[in-house]
Image (tube, rainbow, N blue to C red; front, side, top):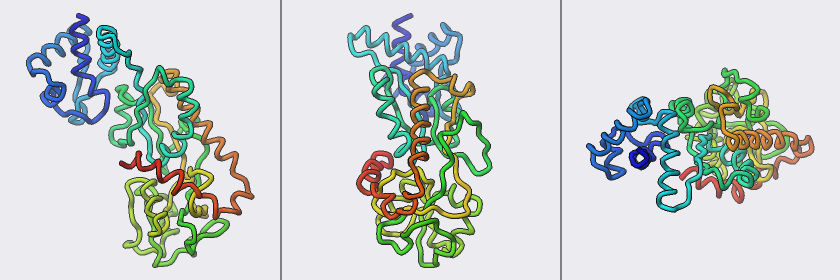
Length: 323
């Protein structure tokens, strides 16, 4: 049976990453096994462990929790038989691109110091229609995103304090200056980059009312909005989770409710995570809380230097996230 389990691991291993295959035939072709052989292996292991192991959800093949555990065991058996390195456990996280660039990136050093040899992180973009199911079936440990304007979340799900919305612009832009920025500051000639969520946020329409629809550019994520704004094309409206230094200016938008960074967790909450996964969650929360504590009134007055690393420290790493 160990041999069949090893073969099952080779077949099912690609399914550890969501949205890969829609049919068994496609899967068997990718792992280069015959269809008859592949079906026989899967059926034999299913019968042995009394579990479907691989199921179809929304047209995609996914591993059941038992199937995921068997793939992990099979990987270890294969490594022992071939006298190769035993693969570490995969820690898959789905993250909003801006939060991956900021909170997640700053939390990683401490996490890696503790768990680098036993856990292999895999960072994936958010899949809003699939993320809860990916977490439920074990393909994803947890997700890091922003809560919607009407969404109520528990204290355990909060990834630090709420974040204000800010206007980010290139150094020298006419809107650069100290203090909050109000709707009266925008003109029909301004070009604004923002996400769908920002467009739909309460009171945001009132803030950008002077900007015609043709100058409201909707971007796939906040990192792209920032990059376009920092190229001199306009300004970006994003949550304030940015580094303390950048290459231009950020100004808090007045009279707009803040947005809450949040974790999407398993049904059991943090208790449903492994120890390395819990460690990463706690480090992200510490980074978010420390960032808010470091903000002082004096720093808010000198906002011309607040975004100084978006070109040198933030935009360059963004290439990995956006590619």
